[in-house]
Image 1 (tube, chains in turn green, red):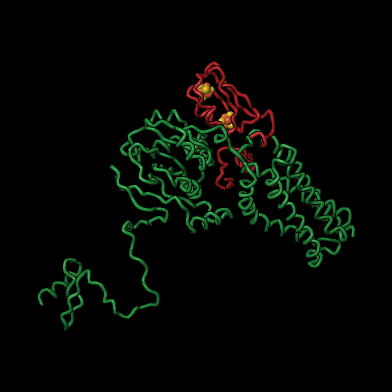
Image 2 (cartoon, rainbow over the protein chains, first blue to last red):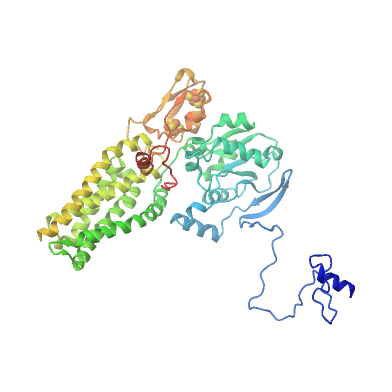
Length: 403
Length: 96
Ligand code: SF4
Ligand code: SF4
């Protein structure tokens, strides 16, 4: 009984749990005694699998980690090279702008296969999409993978923003203790990181020589087999139809919020007339103007990017003007019975201006537009776009008074 | 990338052939094949293909290349006009 009393007073002692619940009966509960199997199940479903042996308190074990390999600087996660449903779902969501700014993996050292001291070190960004695209190509490779902290931004954009930078490479090499893991002194970086990383500075500060790998992850196998040489075509950026279309959803998702304001303005402008304001008129005319606005978006954010190389002018604003004008005519053909001259003018100008502006904004997504060029075309295009919107608004509202 | 051409005659790219030591780095890093090495000297062979990304200048060990690097993004440039160069950022633009 002495023991029991002790336990009630010094309840924090963990060396002896027995008797903590003791009343009259002497039940001794051992610390690790499993619950009897035949016990009533408290709630429905059977329990899930046992915890993964690699789980650690306070950490989340990533699904893409297969196991851990021991190295002189501690265990390094070995990653899977196939994507599962979660990865694909995440990719879809990101394409539509969901969770886009927080889709990343922890920076640091990873590996694929069973790399040794002589295995190559591949460097990449910590944007989860980039990481996924990359590891998918590494099925037959044994390599170390150094993931930089690029704040969840892809290689090209991170390099442009100085996040995939000389200092980040140098720091990450030091933080991970890479020099203790590999015997050689070489890092393979994606070529598009060259905008942010100065190879000779990295060499000077860290002793590691930067080798510029191919631009696209799918060429990395060839590159490694070919004694770290890339063909010319692997060193050139492309902007294929599929790549361009992949950017369309994100462009569209940016338009949702401003569009609400535009629609409100359209509704208000459409209802004004000699009767001051009529909700009925606002609705019928507003619908036509909304169709023109939608056509402008379609022309500028979908048609112009998709048809980019085939529209025979170089300025993006002009490309959008062409697609916008054509779509504007399309809208007119649909509603022509209900429209008079000034309304036709308004809708065509409106559609064209919106399309031109959106196509111009697409310059930010392309890998070949120079800032000097973009600025040059903007100085000419923006005043004209503004003028076109003004003409559209004035003739749209004015035509209501002419009726 | 012959299929994609942007406005001609605007790039700020300049090469100081005197300072070039012919290491070939610019030829490797340029994503548009703007440089070619000829007789151990770099040469600009496609100026209008340059998108002013700055990779060549950053990786030239003798600083023989000069270019005003930047992002060719209309949205970003609008911000620099409104807020000035320092306040503008891609973060609120989400271009990439
Ligand atoms: S700035 Fe970029 S695109 Fe222009 S030459 Fe240099 S590396 Fe090539
Ligand atoms: S990187 Fe500089 S030194 Fe090397 S070849 Fe090009 S211009 Fe010449």
